[in-house]
Amino acid sequence: MASHKRALALGTTGVAAAVTVAFVPTAQATSAHTATTPPARAAGISLTDDQRYAIDEITNVFENGDITSGFAAIEDYGDGCGYTAGYIGFCTQTDDDVRLVTYYDSQEPGNPLAKYLPALRKLAAEGSDAHTGLDGFTSAWKQAAKDPVFVQAQFEQAHMNYLDPALTEARKVGITSALGVADFFDTAVEMGPDGAPDSPDGLLVLVAETTSKAGGTPASGVNEHTWLGVFNQVRTAHLKNPRTPGRKSDWPDSVDRVQALQQMASAGEWSLPLPLHVGADFGYTIPKRGSGSPT
Image (cartoon, rainbow, N blue to C red; front, side, top):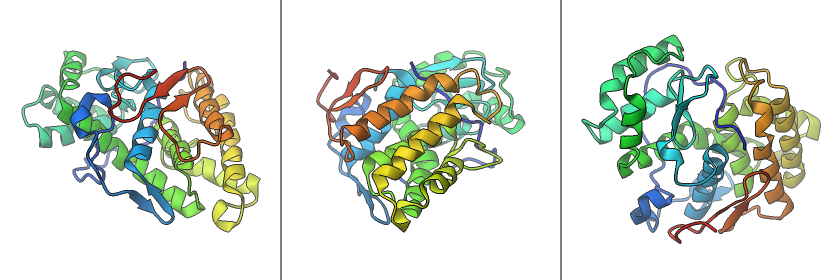
C-alpha cells in the first residue's frame, strides 16, 4: 500500500488562524453532508461540494486505506517526521501539526491536545522529530478524533495549506478538471506544495518539469489530458528517485497513488463522479456523500 508522508516542506512561521473552506466531507460528520458551500473557484475551475469531497477522500484513501480511520491515525514511522497524524499526515517535525492543534484549540478550548501546544511549538521551531513533551500525545489525539470539531479542523487546515495552493497553481497552468486538481492536491500533500529548495520534489518543481517536457501548459494550448499524463510520469520519476532527504526508503513504494489517479484519467473520470473507485493497490470505492459504508 502507498505511503503516508510528504516532504518536510512547511516552514515554522506562525500559525494560520483563518479558514477559507468550511466543509466536512466524510461519514465522521454526517450531519454536515448536506451543507452547501460556495464552489472553490480559480479562473476556470469550479469545484462542487461533491468534487471537493472526492478530492479529499482520494488522498484519504491513499494515506489510510479508507475514508474513516485516518482522522485518529497517529504513528512515528521513523522517517524524520516525528509523529505523522490525521487524514493527510500532519507532522510534529514541521509546523502543520501545531497549526492544526492551535486552530482546533481556538474552536474548542480545553480540548485533549491543548496542553501539548508548548511542546509542539518547540519541536516545530527546532525541526525535531523527537517526542519530548509528548507523553500521552497519541492517546490524546485519538480521543480528540472522536470530536467532529477536530475532524472539521483537519479538513480546514488541509484545504488552506494544500488545496488552496493546488488550486492557485492549477489556475496558473490552465487546469480545468477536478481530477487535475486532485493530482495537484495529492502531490502537494505528499511531496510539498512548494518548489526548491524547500521542496525539491514539490508541486512547483513537478509543474515546471512537466511544462518543459510537454512544450507548454494547457493555458498555452497543450491538451490538458496530455499534459496531466506527462505530469503523472514526472511525479512517478520523482517518487522513484526523490531528491528530498529521507524519502528514498518510502516514496518509491507510493507510486500506486499516481497509478490510481492515471487509471481515473484513462477511465474518463475527469469530473470525479461518485461513487468513485480508487484502483491500483487500493481497491476502494468512495461512496456518495452520506450514503453509508463504501462498497
